[in-house]
Length: 406
Image (cartoon, rainbow, N blue to C red; front, side):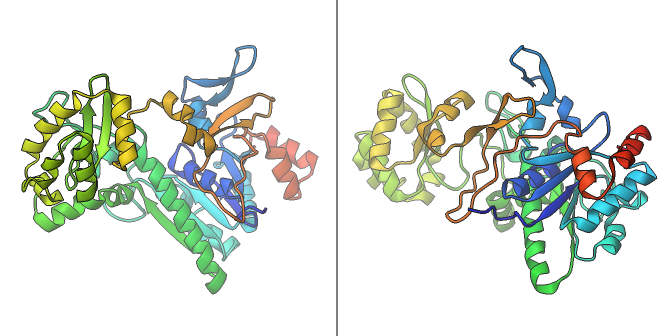
């Protein structure tokens, strides 16, 4: 089976996470991704450890866990973008590329002669994707941004965490850099849309992807709740604003979650707990009633669940089709039979021979496949190879290296 994007070539000027997450998504789909890195330094995330990948003798390589999780399947080429000859190399590579991906501050690449209009002249069919904190226009356009900033500014932190009057209350960021990750996925989606349009129109495109826009989009139902009601959504911890019962519950020997999504599921829950009559109580018969009378439902549920052992209760809920789950650690997740069956954890080869643990893309296809046989590259691993493909001789490559261009 072929890879879905085996015909696509990506010139990746991005670093850290949102851009590399987008280009790794394209690489998993089979695109050839040329990762451009600063000579001698590379992507910032290479140094964002510990932990670092270690050899069999215990010595560490130059790749942190942070770098390894978002650069699979790429070819690393070192180029000094501040050098005129380095800029000429990028323009030359752009002529052969379908996509250029970058996440520099607005105007930086324009100043180097590598902006969209510059590279469009080299390749009118080019799809150029810019990933920034705030987009290519607006009062904040030239400001830098990080995921934590955007989680705060977008309102996500205002609805994440316990209420101020509860233990541990206060705004909380999500446990992974979610805005970076979702920005990467939206960027990849925008690139794919632009490629599909190019097939019809023959035109290139400039995709403008802003992290703040993504953070606002992720407000989803909470933003709609506000726009419909005028009420600012509070932090509710693990309590759902629209569907009940749904939160973390304490059993006799540990915690579980339940996510009861319908009146029928609530009736099944009541049967499991030995109180089918509660599903007929006028206060709790409908979801709207349960949300309205949650201050009465919650104490009753806490009392009931405290009498049950976690494993036995989860088994009974599963048998009845009531959505529920243990609260797994990451170690638990990687041992889960379903996760193992789906092959979510795998090893990719390192150039030095040792395996590199990876998490697989969640995409699965019937008639094509992902490309997962190439691990994240070492710094500059493919420089000579890629420049040779451009037609440069060994002597020319050596000269560029002597000039600190590569």
